[in-house]
Image (cartoon, rainbow, N blue to C red):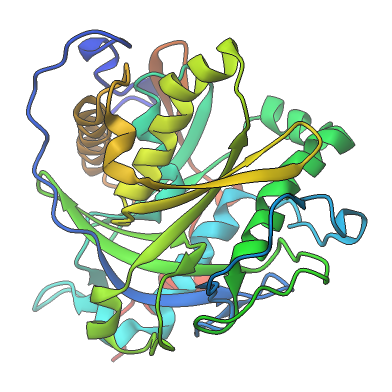
Length: 375
């Protein structure tokens, strides 16, 4: 029987920034996109590619261009808890249950997925980066029918910090969305439409499956755009397997010494892990000045992000593997479908607390009912 509190072993000490790390990269299967869905302007799940964007046909709008255009009318994403993001994955499973749900066993009265973990790409990315980034991060996980579901949970301090963001901070966050508007189109090889307010509430999500050293994962990932000369049939699995997704980023032009150090140690690691988890090989990075004027656009091959950096992609991936493996062991030991394990990464530790009660659940009742075998 597991204790209600404790800590999960993670390899904090396996590597420090700038040191040598010789452990070979763990075995990882090619991340496979098995489907897509959309979150519309009202934050409702839609089982189609209606929010998909294409990398716009060149030439792109002439530089410099202003990322503040229409910023007073921007439609920002409302504050939501991590359970809402996970629920979008659950809704995808519901809409594709014939392909995804399996009978638990010959005599079991339940259905299950052929994956150890169901979660979001952003959570996996943040866990990988915790090898070097000591900021506080919290997740909740529960085991149901052999599958582990994991979502993000904001701490009270993070909630306060987000609620107290200044207008300047919010505007800077919006610059990234505006940059996407300048480089994308609703049609293949179309032209950007930049004279309308950006709706930051809309999302296009891909659903991916991969296997990390024997741990199978099913996760959703918000995708910026697809690079295709022709319209894409997103319902065709074979088409999805060959799609080239592209990530769009913004960064400071003429970085100072502090910004350069931060980029080399942390930001580049975030960019690499985010791309690695969905097999993105190309980034387009917009370099902007302090006033939000886009001055230059660079194309970056993702593998080059690892060159001459103090972090190790192998160490980051092993960090994720060990955490997931030990979390799985803990949940199997607890063996309670209504137990929620809350893990808080802080001060080089991963402390956990086992929570029970309706207020702590991360899976809605309708999903639990879905996984019961019909008689």
